Length: 142
View 1: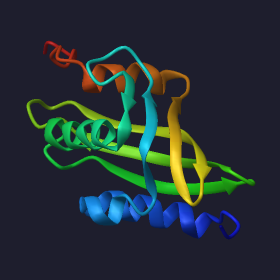
View 2: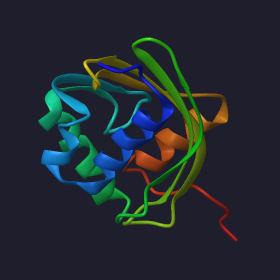
View 3: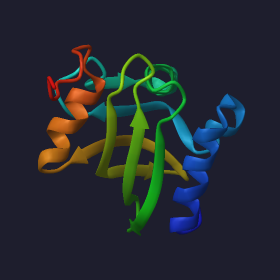
């Protein structure tokens, strides 16, 4: 396997965004695990590529396809990467919006992601949980 590069990480996310499982499995291992942070209906561990793709499908469904990750920076070492992204979206069933910065830490083996987890900092954690929760948006009563 060639050295892990930021371009390889970008290609993995591009493959994921394609929604084509044959392309996705070129970069994401069948036996991968993924941890979603927070305290909401999406939080927790997803096991296997099918579990992870199910999670991603749910993200698309709940956001009405509006969820978007803009890459800010990608850092790589031998078999680890960390990408910093700006994640935005609007809930399909409400006026809730999200705009937060996230770090994804990925572990790689043979050019494929075998483990990943997201990290959200500060007030973004609350915003993330409120966005994905089933509770209605809390706002002004005027």
